[in-house]
Amino acid sequence: MNEERHDALRSLLGAWSLGACPPRESAELERHLRGCAECAEEAARLRDAAGWLSLDEPLDQPGSLRQQVLDWCLARRPAELPVPAWGMPYTAETAKLDALLRDLGPEEWQEVAELPWHGGAELLRPAEVLGRLTAVDGFLALALGLPDPVPAAAPSASAPAPVVERRVPPQEAAVPAPMVPRVPPQGGPSTAATARTARLLADQAGLPPQSVRARWRQQTHDLVRGAALAPQGSTPVDLGFAVLPLRDAFVDRALECFVHGEDVARAVAYPYDPPAPQHLRQMVELVVRLLPRALAGLRAARPQPAGAPGTAGATAVREPRRLRLVVDGPAAGEWLVPLDGERAGPPGGEPVASMVLDGLELCQLAAAHRDPDRLPVGEHGDRAAVREVLHALPLLSRPRAL
Image (cartoon, rainbow, N blue to C red):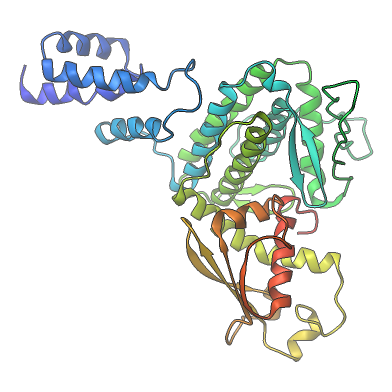
């Protein structure tokens, strides 16, 4: 066997260890391993490592092992259809959530996760959390020309679709646990997502949890393939509260998948890692880009007197303001955030305030999983502007006013 053919067979070892080689290549490689001690040793090492990825293994294994094996494989055989960088956070977070769900037993599927939102919280079992994720991810599916996972609304229904009213029954009938009230129906832009979630939860109510998981996981695979076929990420996606380019919509969905995955992990007392630094950075950048909309939504809910900062009359009194946002931690960076909206004109001069906080905490606050009045924040300058930004961020969790 010449050296070129030897190297070609050796490059298949990573895929072979994961059972991803076609039968013909597997047979040829296995014949080669019987006569090549060097390749056989490497194959044994890789097969042992891949064994940690077995469906039957517990969740608490080295978190980087799977990525190391995949990186090794891709270094020798590049992906024919690579996932764009903006699709990687979604790919990683859905895989991480699936690993958690794969490890759940029957009793754990019955645990109740609390999903805080701006203004309230929902109590859902893990399969219902997947229903929520599937329904909203369906907006991306529609934009990519994929099937909608949500059943169509009844044609005779002239009134708005009902909000989900099902409650998770208490696990101990003798002493019912007090329940956190769900977010009351708000109407407005988030109604579409709420109605879609209600229809999908009703549709999957009788399914076993693993069937719900399989539906959700298949959709995530389809979406990632769709992202690979649209690498520019410019396709508009209507999320109900805003129309975002596909690249931003994928990062938005990755953030929600992480947040709700952590909600489920907390309910079943499992460990759950934060996003990788490069993925967290993309989430932080998206939150910063959406922050002006959140500020506008906050002011719309709390009308300001004429001439106050951010109102039409304020532009004649002062220049449009901006805040310096400094993010610490793995997603470190610095941004200048306009405080008075695009209509106020381009901001100028020095920032009126500076705010410093951790990137993961910023994302958790945007998901309404942190209290803006208790979050550790470094601040300097106009304290009112800092407080306004902190209280606007949780609106991104239920953007009814954006």
